Image 1 (tube, rainbow, N blue to C red):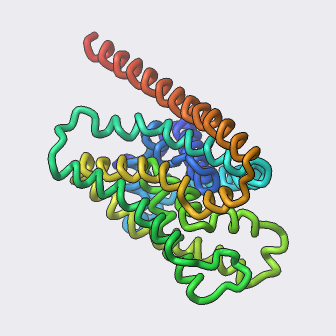
Image 2: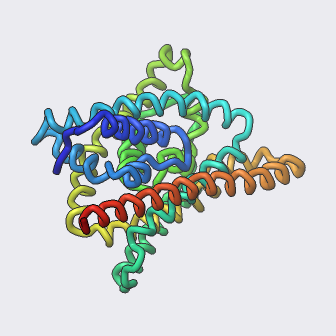
Length: 311
């Protein structure tokens, strides 16, 4: 696969993809992988991650602009989301879910026109079930998510969460923050970020473990996903579509949203629901408009190539 950059524009596109990946780690509803598909970088990115040890120099040079974008997106997202969650928690979540739902046409485009077989239906249903099962388990099992007294069990859980977060960045339509909300750790982790974090070794170690889990998951799953893209792309996207639909539902019954519901009074409940619906629609409209724009651009490019071919 061709990984070398032929122009500054190609490098800039990779920075943009990285920016949205970094943003999606913090901002619920934004899928960096979906943006990578739109900008035609997804397959290359998966190839680079899965072959980084075999073709180290080539893959690292390709990934550097993406990593630079990730750092920028993560930093901006951190400042933005901390403010929004402190002021407008439920309304912000609705907007972010709207952004995620707006990417669905892009994902379902991958399975459009495919014959629905029992196997593909089962794969889609499996994708639907997984986030709901995780949500129910996290609600049923009482977990101390205050991070006041972090134990060895917490670190093991965060290692697993870090690995799962890597999946959300590799698989289009999934969100790292939605996953953290399902487990009930998103608000807690966001609230713990500050200067005082570096004076609390146990808390700082939580983030180190998350990063380690993320690195392990990226190296492990990128190989698997790269293979699936080459051998069973359609079946793979049936699972992805199921996961994406279920994730949008799961966030509203996850631990973080449950904590918001417990603080509701009659007045702020009505206000949050009404503004939440409005922001969800706006978020969807923005993502869907981006999808329409890129689709038209793709069609125009295809028509241009066809005209050149016929000359």
